[in-house]
Amino acid sequence: MDFQHSEDRRMLADTLRRFLAERAPVDRRNAAAYGDTGYDPAVWQGLAELGVIGALFPEAAGGFGGSGFDIMVVFEEIGRALAVEPFLGALTVGHALAAAGRTDLLEPIIAGTSIVTLADAEPQDRGPDAPYATRATRDGEGWRIDGAKAVVAQAEAAALLLVSAQTEDGASLFLVLTDAPGLTVQGYANVDGGRSGEVRLSGVTVTEEARVAADGRAALAAAEAAALLALSAEALGAMEVAKAMTIDYLRTRKQFGVPIGKFQALQHRIATVLLEVEQARSAVINAADAFDHDQGADRDRRLSAAKYTVGATGQLVAEEAIQLHGGIGMTWELPLSHYAKRITMIDHQLGDQDQHLQRYIALGCVV
Image 1 (cartoon, helix red, strand yellow):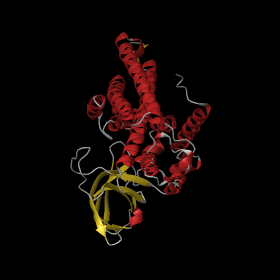
Image 2 (tube, helix red, strand yellow):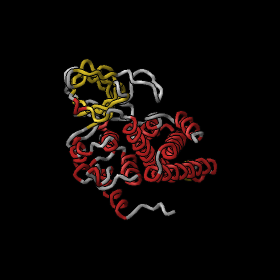
Image 3 (cartoon, helix red, strand yellow):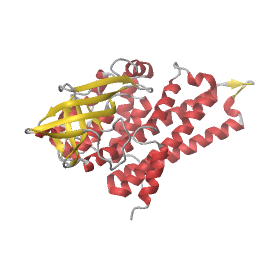
Image 4 (cartoon, helix red, strand yellow):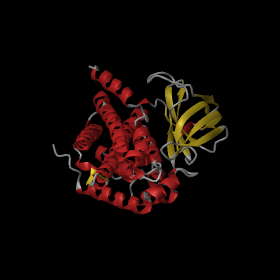
């Protein structure tokens, strides 16, 4: 099977790479990522105007892509540039809304005029099928929502939250304005750049129309599938850059009058990195194909395989890149340190490598 990207996808990747290299080089990226907003609104709007957000959604939803390989191409370039713009929120909320049959709400998301994010995780641990602690109860002709959501990406910048809450019908999904009375956000900086927030909902009232899914399990599964593929591709892009930086350093750093890349022990270590990164690429390609052609357990198993693989490989790449650079690899001024942080933190988003290995095993037992 030919897994080479189509000409259109190669053009999309090239356009996105050149735009980010020009408009968001590492120094400007860091200024935005660790600043008050956690991203650059001008870069976000420029990317929206280029149609990059639209590439994440099918034509039926108002986009012009939406396949697994479209998502892979976009997020691999995001990983290469360490872009911190709120793509993941647009992707997850957009795919959840599409799965719930609410494609009519996607236009401002695709246009980049409305920043949205998914508020699903809660401060306390809960199993995959356990009820949410956040509750929504009938309030006249609408709903009242009470509870808390944790680690909500770009919660301060978002205009809308897609909130999961337990109702009489099960796990429902609600679109909630972030300026709604009773909703508060406590924001903070992420270790790897960008910002997240803890969200509290105390007597937040919404209309019946705000409930976009009475039973949101299928919509959340669609959002999770898209997010797992996106994060795996982002990690792959970041690993490719970290690998290239390390190879370049081995070629230029000299000891005893020769480049350190001439030393056989270091050659063996970087060769292992190259092999493992290619293995990770194969896993992400496999996941992108599953996103398009498989459903249910088969799709989820391959997505977990990719997330596990990039987690394990990312740990190896980050550690070897830092160690082969020596002390300079940990400095703020060297871009490598920021790539290592992002690669490490991706492993902890939506389940780390241990969780996805367990999920992969469990899904393999499904008959």
